[in-house]
Image (cartoon, rainbow, N blue to C red; front, side):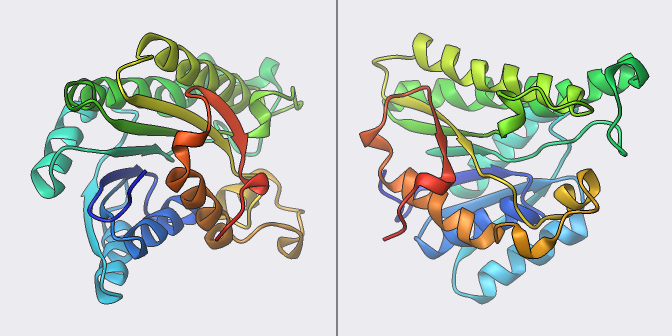
Length: 241
């Protein structure tokens, strides 16, 4: 995928991997729109990108809100034009400290599904139709190894991410031949606030730097024509060049 001038919409863009992806994409020449709930933190990331010479815009919004998708997609397109690249980076762990499913309220599971699955579905629906009409586009699902391994106490998050992976595969199958492609990317364990909330005893030195992971994912995006649409990939296998 050609990055120079591409219109990119990245959710979860106020911190961690989402913020790092926004910076990395902007360095490649993409026109970036960042989405997250925290307006001040989000705007600080966008300002940093602009100060470094990139183009970035901040849109405060909650992807788990049923009313958000159309508004976010429309506002993003008004800022940078039709979206070429959609990165679903926003995510929630569910209840923290992590707990057994027997101790998880249905409302807590519903919230995890709203943010990690239903919200991305709505946003893809709002963006992918235009991609189909133009005959091109890439949608990236930032997933987790919890989507394929049943870790105790990670139930709400793991269930939502497993469905998230399958969502990418179904989109890929249904839009095969249209020029719109999908990929799920497992970034691995990173030194982020989210990881610290999930595993507070973890040694940060043992975790990947989100900036390095972002560079690997950008390398994947650049070479996206080389993998099958609907593939599930691991960022650690990406080569940064």
